[in-house]
Length: 358
Ligand SMILES: [Zn+2]
Ligand SMILES: [Zn+2]
Image 1: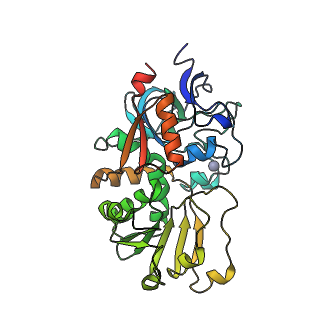
Image 2: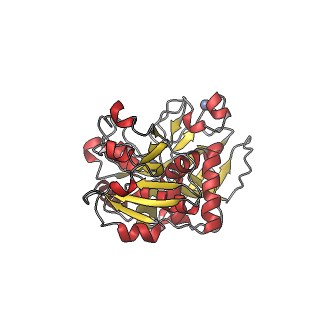
Image 3: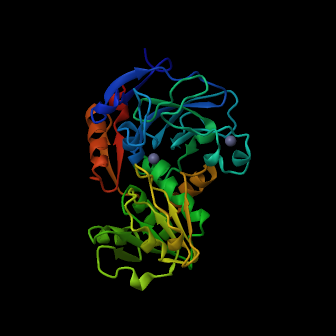
C-alpha cells in the first residue's frame, strides 16, 4: 500500500536507537475538509529533531518521524480550503501544524501561542493519531499552516527557513529590530546564522556574539557589522548598556547571563529562542535591575510572520548556508548525529525524496 492509504517515512523506533532511524510505512490521520496533502521534496534538519528523538526534552512517542522544515508540492486539497493554494503549488510547512483558530490568541495573529497548539510531529491529533514529520514521503497538514514559497527561493534554501528562519525572524520583528537599532545575535549556529541574515536585512546594526573567534569570518560574511568573542578578556566593556535587543540563539543554559543582560540598554530586551535541555536559566533579580532590561522567550513564528519572512527573503535574495544530505536511513542518521555534535555549517537540508520514496 502507498499514498493515499499510507505514507512512508524515516522513523526512530526507540530512544536508544535514535542514531539509527529506519524506513517505515505509517497510516496518516483521516483527511479533513481543510487539509492539504503534500508530496515532500525536501526537509531541513532542526536541533529540535535531535532533542526530541534522543529524549533530551523528555518522553516522546515512538516510532516517530521527525522533521518540521518541509518543502513539497500540493497534491490534494480539502473541499473547504480557502487560503488560495492550488494543486502542484510549491509550499512549506514549519514546526506548527494545527491550532484551534478560535481562541483570542488565534484571533489576533498569535496562533503560535494557542493553548491548543499541535506540533508538526509528536503531538496527538484529536482522533488519537500521533502526528508525523517531514522525513517522509508525504505530509497532511491543515491549510492554515501551509505556506506558498516564492518562486525565487530555491527549495533547498527555503526548507530551513520554515523553522530556524521563522524562529529567529519573529523575535526580531516583534522587538523592533530595524534601522538605528543595535542588535546582538548570541550563538552562531543554525538559528544564529539566520538571526544575522534577517537582522541585517531589516536594517539593524548587527553584532554576532560567540565564544571564540572561530566563526568571525562566517559571521561577517553573513552580514554582521561586528563580532564579539566572549573568550577574550574584558570583551563586554566596550558594549555595556548599548544593545537595544539581543536574541539568544545559544543552545546552552550555561551562559554567564548577568554579563549579557548588562549589555542591554535601559529597557533593552534579551530574548531567548534556543531551548536547552535541563533546568534552564537561573535569573537573579539583582542582575536584572541595573538597566531594567526585559528577559523573555519567543516560540517559532505565526503564519503572518512566516509569509513576511518569505517575502523579505525573496525581495532581498537572502540565502542561508545549507549542506545537503540525501534522505533515507543513512542520510538521516548522519544528519542527526552531526546535528547533535554541531558539525554543520549551518543547516542540513535532506534531498532526493523522489528517489527514496519512489
Ligand atoms: Zn487557538
Ligand atoms: Zn525546529
